[in-house]
Each structure stands twice: as C-alpha cells, then as structure tokens.
Length: 316
Ligand SMILES: NC(=O)c1ccc[n+]([C@@H]2O[C@H](COP(=O)([O-])OP(=O)(O)OC[C@H]3O[C@@H](n4cnc5c(N)ncnc54)[C@H](OP(=O)(O)O)[C@@H]3O)[C@@H](O)[C@H]2O)c1
View 1 (tube, rainbow, N blue to C red):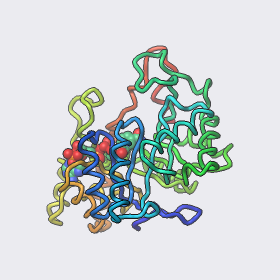
View 2: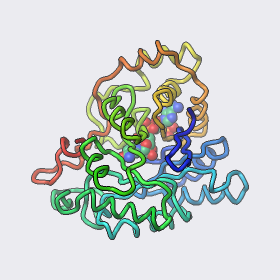
View 3: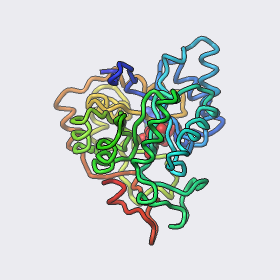
View 4: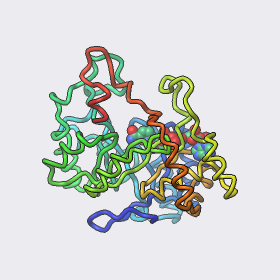
C-alpha cells in the first residue's frame, strides 16, 4: 500500500517528510530536494516556525514545473493557543498565508491541550485553559468550518487517545479523518491502532526514528536509541539497508503513514527508498517483539502543579 484513500477518494501518500526542528536556512533545500526526488507529502505545523520557508520551497517546485499543487499532500496543524471555535479559521488562514497556499490537504488539532491566546509554550499553570473552558467538541466545530470554507480538504487530530477521539466521533458532522501520534517499534500503540481501524481513522506515525534531535529538555536520561537497536540493525544488515529504512518500512507494512524528518540530502533520499524494502512476517514479528511501552515525547511539558492537564487525561 502506498496511499491512504479517504472516503471521498482523495489519496494521501503514506510516506511524507517531517519538518519539526528543520531549521530555517535548511528547510527550503530539504523540501525542494524531497519534492524533486518524489516525496509528495509534507508534514508541517505553525509551531515549527518554518512554514514560510516551506511555502517558498513548494512555490519554487511548482514554478519550476517539478510538481503541481494538486499532486502534493500538505498537512498542517492548529496550535494550542487557537482552540476557541472562533480562532480556528483565522489560525488556518495564517498558516495558509505562511505556506503561500489556498488550502491544506489535512489540518489537525495538534494536541488535546488548550493554551491562552498568544502562549506558544507553557511556562506555568496560568498559561492553560482547561478542557472544561474550551471543550474539544467546540474546537472541532471550528475545524468543521475550516472544511466548509474550503481551507482544508480533510481534518483530523494529533496526540489523541481513544477517549478524546470518542468525544469528537459522538458529536461531529465531519468525523476525524486522521490521528497523528508517536509510534515506532518501542511504542507500537496496537490498541489505538485497532480502535482507529475499527472506526475508519488511519494513523500517521510521528518520531518514527526516535526523534534524536529533540531539544535536551525534552529527553529523558538513558533513552534507548531505536536506530542502534540490535534487532533493527541485524535486519538492516541482512538487506544491505539502513536501520532508518527498516523502521520506515515496518510502519508502512503496518498500514501506518510515516513522516521521518531529515534536512540531510542523503538521508532524505535514503528514507524515501524505504518504500522498496520488503519485510517478511518473521521480520515483522521480530520487530513487533521490541515493544517497550516507551514514548520519546512524554507530554510532561503540559503538566504543571495546579495546572488543568495530567498525562492520563492527555493520552486518554
Ligand atoms: N503531531 C505531533 O505532535 C508531532 C510530534 C513530533 C513530530 N511530529 C512530526 O513527525 C516528524 C518526525 O518526527 P521527529 O522529527 O520527532 O523525529 P524522527 O523523524 O523520528 O527523527 C528525526 C531525526 O532522525 C535523523 N534522521 C533522519 N533520517 C535518518 C536516517 N536515514 N538515518 C539516521 N538518522 C536519520 C534526523 O537527522 P537529520 O535531519 O540530520 O537527517 C533527526 O535527527 C516531525 O518532524 C514532525 O513533522 C509531530
């Protein structure tokens, strides 16, 4: 499977380019290289601070005749400070301006966590709004307006567990069409994958390579390194492949879209070539046995003393 097909027939390429931490000054070339070698899916978000430069790269590729807009799949996300229903359409308009686009293919609620307007990253409990103050269902009404206004073709969520997803599925006129979450061999999320499968919601895997370039404040001590895993390395060696390619291929074999980030020309190519790697059922099982229940992005940065969010609610 190379695409995820949505109910209206639209097709999202399962392998895309991630852009969190892709630095200004580098991301332009990264996106251009990616599109030139065949990527048609780019994952963006305003909080990554680089949508303008990504927009310039997309524009350059279209102007040079490398690709047509309709052949690209561009995803962006609603930041946590714009969860009020009336803030959602203005937020997507800002993103579209930065990306120099008329519409995004997919727009996601980035986190089931609300911040006060203008707060980008929380530094105290006072920065938050609780879900009682802004229920996710209200934010979703704003997301539906984004589709009705033609500003996004599809809408979905990110970092949602079953309970938060169920809130939206019960009340919405447009069902969430995507859940983007952390998943890789050390954190497989099989339960969520099954639940989403039963409800016709595909998953996209973020941090599929272990996100080793995260700021150190977001890292735990002695984190296991996915790319150094013995089983992953031995399967890679047996196929004359790179460990990253095995991780990407594993996700594709599970039917989970995957968006590895790179700004390195060679690794952008290497990751794209992972589409051609076949894993047999024995290799898939060896990788499935690596489960450690280990998130790299713990979500603890949303938890403050006397704040309205606890990890159990965020991941519910
Ligand atoms: N929705 C959310 O809340 C959320 C959260 C996290 C991430 N995301 C999305 O998912 C994307 C991917 O996740 P991520 O950025 O956290 O981490 P990732 O893709 O798991 O890992 C990125 C790291 O792997 C390196 N890398 C890339 N290809 C490699 C290869 N072939 N061999 C060895 N190392 C390689 C990159 O370095 P180089 O750049 O130097 O190659 C970078 O250090 C993000 O960029 C973002 O678009 C979404």
